[in-house]
Length: 112
Image: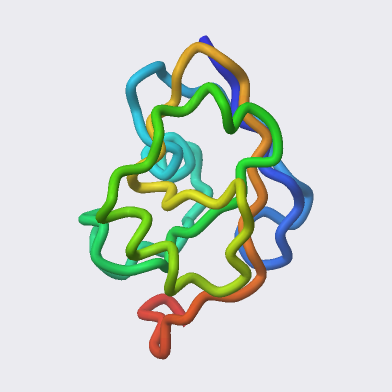
């Protein structure tokens, strides 16, 4: 079973976290199942960028992003070459190291 290491993020996991993920689930599904409440304003439908993450290790093991995800990522704050929407990035067999960016472009956060 692959693991996802989340780097420390002041809001979502201040100490960082290492969680087990199931092959075939998305990064956000694994995170939410383990209490890491990554923002997802569009309810994980690839219609916003609030679940943007940067995959620091294991990026190559993910299926390539599709055109819709790429179009959405173009709008993300802090976009990097290894950026993905966590609602679209499906966990494979390899372990991942993921950074949750400090900011999103979401104007209103329902949980604050």
